[in-house]
Image (cartoon, rainbow, N blue to C red):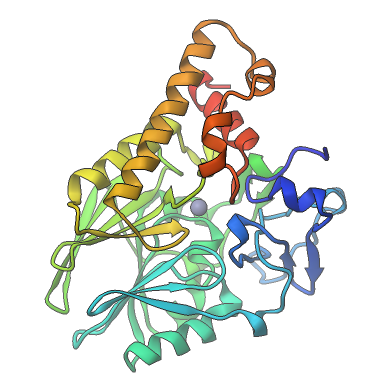
Length: 347
Ligand SMILES: [Zn+2]
């Protein structure tokens, strides 16, 4: 087995030798459940891409946790799924997007990577002509904010929780990937930020945005389209997989569970749920995901109480019964166990 992997890497991919490739200013690999994923390489304030670490490239780790298919952007397709009338989910590379359309203009939730902006625009134009009026980021990660600068320069107003702007404004240590993510350019930063909650009133819709503290990161937003009965969760929900918990960005397993409970409380059996990653979902699937998180937390808590080390817990295959459903995509059992252990032990 190779070296410790980024949570975005598949163990299977490494075994099959599908290490990342480096194409110009982007780094690519295959990851996140076989869905196409690609993080644009972060840029410095001066707009120059930083050189990738040779050591990281050599072992197949991505400088910016860069999951994606090793295919050029020209081959990426943005696929649209209607959530309800007037609300669509777009899937390309990176986190899922939500598009609210109507006569008051377009609200976009998350915007993937900068090189995909023109394709995302084209997909939105199929829904409705006209510029994007508002962009709301569910958290700071580059596969959810990479298009910010492009949309802002075209006139969109950027919104996010306070911590998102704060983190994007400064270099960030991504411990899970062993590298520093440079600050974003000024034009990519959210212009309007909120602490606990905020609301949009447009297109006959009421959109309530709730902060989920210390969950996937410290700045996660849950986006509730009340009339549509739909919720965009951001990365507190990886549908069909163990999630990545960004502990270095203030995330925690406890916060993830609280955030998921909150979405469950806002939903009913008809609610459509747009996860941060993975296919369009519903309450029953989210409940199963919550149960998995609670089960894993319980096992790790018991192990910590007994003084079991992470190595011993990992060797005991503590999640074996769950791995078939949750450990085959995106984040491996080992990586997830490690993050939950670290989250609960404070290590
Ligand atoms: Zn994320």
